[in-house]
Image 1: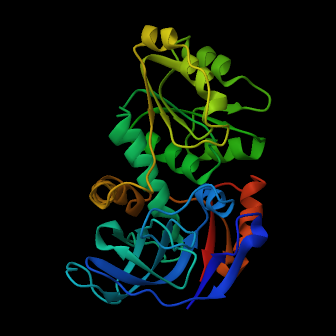
Image 2: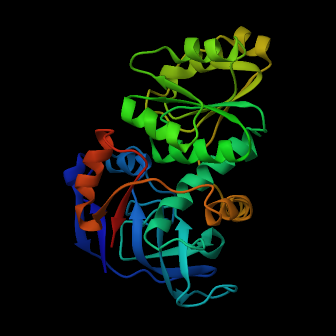
Length: 325
């Protein structure tokens, strides 16, 4: 088969479409013939040499895919060869075939084509696990998501609105903010021109956000705490703005707030399976019913993954970038 390999850490040119050995499913795994994968920010960080796959995972980038089951490993039940599926991966999505634990499989949602389904596993698992399983966003609460035009952001807006939350977003252009508005966002903040803490307090009468989902990290830490309401919850899932920052614990204590950091890729298989089961129960009906939809910016051949990474690094996209095998 062919897969995108990383010759050595570096720029997009480090991604090379190469012939590699076919994977063989182990105990509890299935082999997927990949139809499509999607680009995530973590893939860029891996390419740069800062985010190695967990032990035993495929060395190729790609944290999600869609396709058809080509073979079942020992001990797998409930799935059959030929089933159309999408899957959460620890790596290997940028390839023509990939093995994945059966607990990380999802059926292609009713009414959706198999290519588009590649958009769903990583963003739905990330948003549902963090916003709802960790931060416990509730109907009527105010939710702030940074990077509203990203794959994570566009999904977070829709899921938060689906449960009855008030949604605020930050984004860096009028086009991205308009896309968020079309998805249901109530409060639109251009982070290049506006201070998100001031704008959020202005709109909420000084109350702030009950839940903040942050991809920036250190650069936004203090301001995110300032933006929180009393009993607010800040969930950090990215480090685009750095790893280290000072925090005024007095501000945190005064607000009786919580700061949580999570990652998905390195979690134990049982935890990933539990998240996928929750996504299938809570999110899949919303997708099948048309209340939640993936936002596809563009679709490119997988062999052109380097160009897809350039697009992502330029932040020139809204939603997901798909790669077809």
